[in-house]
Image (cartoon, rainbow over all chains, first blue to last red; front, side):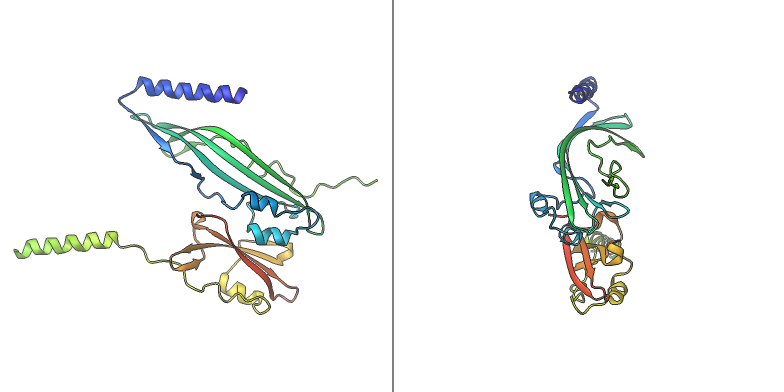
Amino acid sequence: MRRRSRYRLQVATGLMVVALLPACVIPLPIQEAYRHGSRENLGAAAKESIVAGKTTREEILLRLGQPDGAALDESWLLYVCVRSKGGVLVFIYPSPAMPAFETVDYTRLVVYFDEAGVVERAQFEQRTCRETEFITQGADVKPRPCIDVLGKDLPLVRERRARD
Amino acid sequence: MPMKLRLVVQMLVTFVTAACAAAPPLGQQGWLDFLQPGATTRTVAADRLGTPDADFEGGRILTYWVAADAGGYYKPRQHDTRTHSLVLVFRQDDVLDRHSLVKVRGE
C-alpha cells in the first residue's frame, strides 16, 4: 500500500515536471518486452515439469539449461525471468536525467535438491513491480527489484537440519 | 557524364553498398553434429567446445552458452547474444550419455 502511494507520488512529480516544461519534454513509450539478457523459458510448462521426489538435477538442467544461480553445493538452482510490461520514458531537454516509469514482471524459480540430487521442492514466485528509474549520461540509477534476482537471500550451502 | 562526376557517383555507390551490406553469419551449419551419445568423449567435446561455462555434479554435467543466427549455432563472445544453453551429461567412463540444446531466449 505504502509502495503504491510512493509510486503515485513519483508519477505525479514526473507529470508535474512534464506539465511545467511542455516545450522541452518528450514522453517516449517503453515497449513490452523481456529485459535485456533475461531468460524466456520459465513458463507454466517449466513449473509443471518439476515433480518433487522424482525429478533429478540432471533432468532440470537438461530441460531448463544453465541456471542463473546455484548454491555452492548445488543444493538449489535459481532461474529468473524479467519482463517489462511497458511504461514511459520522459525525455527532458536540457536536463541530463530522464525519468522512466515502468511496470515489470519478475518470475523466480528456485529448485531445492536433496543429497541424492532429487528435487525436494520447487519455489515459484511471480511479482509485478512498478519501477521508477532515472537515466543519466554515463550511469543510470536502477531501482532494486521486488524479488531478489541474484538469490542473495538464499543459503550458500544446504542448511543442516538438527537430528533427533 | 564528365569523368570527375562519374568517379564521385561510383565512390558514393561503393560507400552506400558497403554500409548496407549485412555482416556475414557467425554460425556454422552442423557445428554440434559431432555430439553423439555413447560415442563422443569428454576430451573431444572439450577440444571442440572449449572450457564449459558451468559444471555440475563434480563435472559429470557441463553447460555451454550457445548463440544462433542464420548460419547456424556458434559460441557467443557477448552475454547478450546467448540464445541457447547446451547441456552435456557424461557417463562415468567420460563418454557422452545425454545432451540437450535448450532455447532460453529469442522468440
